[in-house]
Length: 229
Image (cartoon, rainbow, N blue to C red; front, side, top):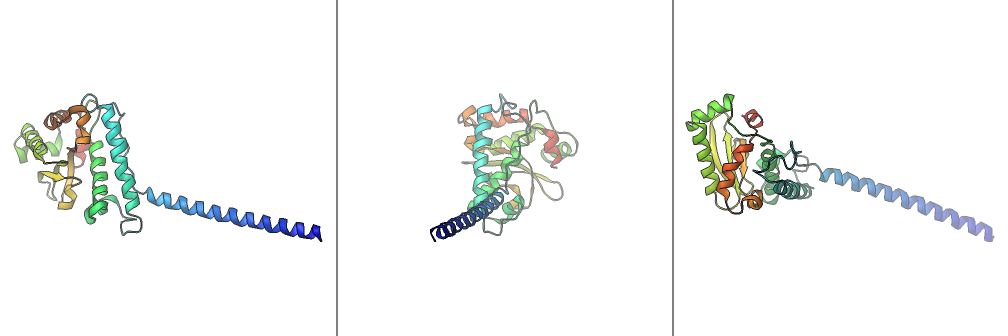
């Protein structure tokens, strides 16, 4: 009898362990599935090394701005959209239709995706082709456009963005947007955006926002920017 009891107990213990392992496996699958959902939105890959934009933007600033601030917006949005109508939406739709915390983080992801892909090592110069023609027609010259753009960025109170945007007919305009603002919410297409949040320039320029804006033109990738027009 003792032997029978022993084998019965051993069998029950074994079945219990198998059940427990199966349950843990299912939990792990569910957790992995949730993690995949939570990582729907991602930041754009940098098309250059973190030190490629020096001395205009330092490696330290790129690593902080892209690696910490931009990543934080991505992490926040992936958590915020779970269980909402935006859980399976694309980023531009979220920006156009959301508000509050979801909009703030979605807007900043889109803004930074555009921003970080607008630069390259040894960039600068002037645009060519259709964008150059539109700038000259709209603002008189490229230099006048830069002057107006810089003035808009310098005068924006607090944190935000200065944008070059186009409407459906190709007409250009310069917009000042606070915080996470993007031209998409006004029915426009963003062509070029400069970040005037302090974290984008303070390590390199302290409070000299105007100086920062003048320097950023030296690293603009006009091939990428012109393709947005």
